[in-house]
Length: 148
Length: 200
Image (cartoon, rainbow over all chains, first blue to last red; front, side):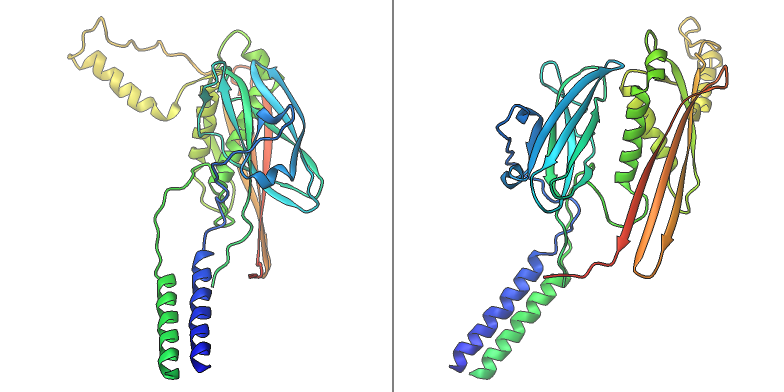
């Protein structure tokens, strides 16, 4: 009996420490994933989501674009279909006529918070006149870091 | 037997604890990621103000008229840092002017390199080493028509549980000939830091 208790103690203690170590990730840049998932509606080509779960919580209500001063200006209305708050980050990707990326990796991630069922308009302006199309990449922000 | 188990448990725990404490990892991060290390002016704020200001400027109807058939020449006067912290405002001006230049709407003259350019031209003209027919001529540079200038100010408040900082960045475009301010805009940032209970 004592032996069993001893083994259990060892197992419990070590598992506790393992979890403690695993959760010390910084909260800043989480959510960089490779499995993109798009929704099945007409606007889907404009929205890239980080995780499949996000597709159940987000929806594009409207996409508008126009040329202002020969630059592509985009308004994209993002609506939450989730009852709780969503802390998100997004950035625009810009493509030229041939579908090549314009000003790659220069558009910063922007934080946006959506309360339950709230919708908001994301606004983007093309960096130059060559831009012909775009998409928006949305990811969820990790909330906290747990530390010992 | 019991003692042995206890000793093993203790040993394991200590090893794990030591392992946790001494972990130091170097990795590359995303330069455009949202950075929330502390409350002071950071890379995300810089990218936000530079991006928003550039977007606002290139979309404004006034700039549409100015850039209809030509690319106006601008120069950036410095951005005054009126905040309580040390901020490299030249970095903000660099970002703004680079974005504007790359948008293809404007051209720039760089006032910070006038001396270096003069020295090079002097060398070409008077050094005796450069073919005089191919030397760059004095007095042919194009003068700036517009001046871009601005302020960065902040309001900082804090109590024992919470700190709050508010930044306001104002940018203006002045027509040098007429002295008229053709365009102006401001952007704001609010950051708060509060103690959060650590949950499991």
